[in-house]
Amino acid sequence: MPDPLIDALERTLAARESAGLGRHRRTVASAAGPRAVVDGRELLAFASNDYLGLAGDPALADAAARAARRWGVGATASHLVCGHFEAHEALERELADWVRPCDGARAVTFSSGYLANLAIVSALAGRGTDVFADRLNHACLNDGALLARARLVRYAHRDPGALAARLRASKAPRKLIATDAVFSMDGDVAPLPELLALAEAHDARLVVDDAHGFGVLGGGRGTLAAFALASPRIVLMGTLGKAAGVAGAFVAAHPAVVETIVQTARPYLFTTAAPPMLAETLRASLARVRADGWRRERLARLVARFRAGAASLPWRLGASDTPIQPLIVGAPTAATRLSQALERRGILVPAIRPPTVPEGTSRLRVSLSAAHVGDDVDRLLAALAGVAREGP
Ligand SMILES: Cc1ncc(COP(=O)(O)O)c(C=O)c1O
Picture 1 (cartoon, rainbow, N blue to C red):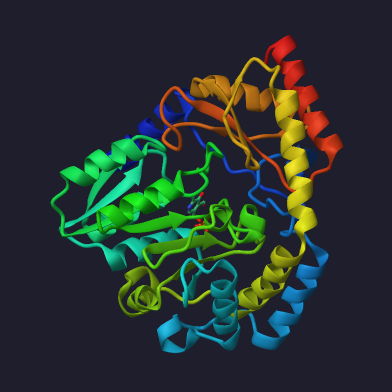
Picture 2 (spheres, rainbow, N blue to C red; picture 1 turned 120 degrees about the vertical axis):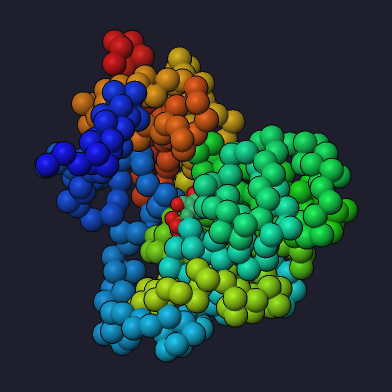
């Protein structure tokens, strides 16, 4: 029996594959860490967002086991029904105290950053709101504007002048400026002081997605702290599955903003709470984020070592001081071939292609972790130099 929908789906999938845009999941058979066993083979991985090396930390695994015995394994319901446990409450207090985007800030946690961004934008925006978004923002901030039925106005990457022109042209009664703090595929940092000044001048709110800065920049407090910025205009989102090594996310902001999210945001109301055992594990991880300055120091040394060595490679190295180090290759097929050539040499670096990055900027996204050692970076640089010499 012919099935036109299945036929159409299969044709589209085949076309994606031949354009070099097919995506393939790898099944990892080892514990979290830079040595990943994939298809029975150990690869040295520069692919995770585990910047501080906490995801595979044995002390945190013990904390998780204790937390599971204390709280059980599931939250059983959404936060507003009966899924909000003391562990969530304590984590929210500790996070608000650590990141402090404004005096008296409160925090609320989510089971993912994707949901947190949807919740922020859909709670604060609606029809008639203009959401101004950096062109290279992570997709979920844009999806929040779609969910809110707000108008999405994109501005050139890290360009306050372009944003100012769009703000001046806007007649919307409510305005949100939404930006990644550290851009996820480029590793560069948003001009947050200029964006906050524009938010003040145009009576807008500034939504800062610090998925890749929390735990890493500003002594671990994040990108706002790196710029010494705080304001009741700021709504901060941070994720807890990257540098914090576990899972989930938080929003920290003025208590009225947080309470509005709790009362009205559909991505908060209509989903089961993350297990309290994860919230308790995150409290242990946050203690490491706060105390283990050595992890950030090691990471900074690894970043400097990689950049020094990569300067002589034939691919353009993005301007980034963060653990996200992109090597821009160009065509999707070229990025995939390079990634495969590294894999044959025992190294895992993902190729990132459209629509995750703009056309013509397919790349290798090298990400570094405090769980790497200097020799790991040297192995990666030697493998890249070998591919440059011999071709993929
Ligand atoms: C900038 C940015 N924001 C939000 C997210 C979503 O966070 P999560 O993976 O916790 O859903 C990610 C990555 O996944 C991200 O890179």
